[in-house]
Amino acid sequence: AQSVAQPEDQVNVAEGNPLTVKCTYSVSGNPYLFWYVQYPNRGLQFLLKYITGDNLVKGSYGFEAEFNKSQTSFHLKKPSALVSDSALYFCAVRDRNKAAGNKLTFGGGTRVLVKP
Amino acid sequence: EAQVTQNPRYLITVTGKKLTVTCSQNMNHEYMSWYRQDPGLGLRQIYYSMNVEVTDKGDVPEGYKVSRKEKRNFPLILESPSPNQTSLYFCASGAGTGGSGGYEQYFGPGTRLTVT
Image (cartoon, rainbow over all chains, first blue to last red; front, side, top):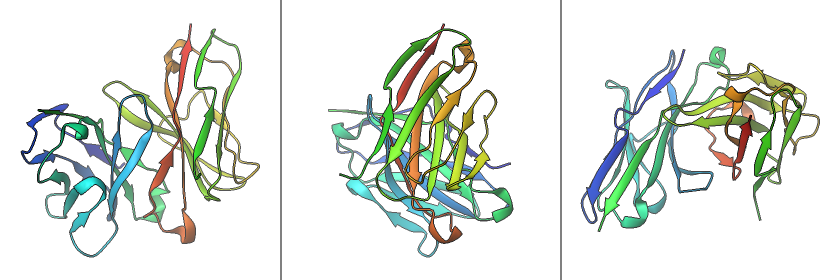
């Protein structure tokens, strides 16, 4: 069964400092990987995805993520965090192996708090 | 405006009283899905649909039904709701074309359900 782990329930960072949100995954085949963000009282918004090719993926709002196959990780990063980045972040995985169906599995979420 | 709509946004009901949460998308997406969000558990997939008349179980399908009679609509049915189905529910859609799993999803605003 596929799974996603986000080991940190909350990440605190000062505005202007680098932000990293960790994600590791497990699938039987190769993964499609996604990051979503949820602002208070809103639905989830897509940030970025890894499909194939370059391991460094750039997405919305200055976020990027690096796919590391050997470590089965897909950590989300932003070089300089803003107070407006404070939100709940979710990592998700879908197995490329068609035998796994088209299930999308989310991690438990990481709350990011950026302090001025 | 491209969007996923859900109704109702808030619902309080009693155990055993059948209810339906509607979901509609205007992006001509093939893929639609339902999730529930619970504190500490992230989002868990209930059911998904790759196209009209095609539905599959996610990770937590027990106690739920879905149907996909039209491409744009994907209602979630709770035939006999129980208190453990109290949760925040999200509908989502995605392009899902060509059988590739690398598509992002667009989420509705959520439905907060309380079963007493």
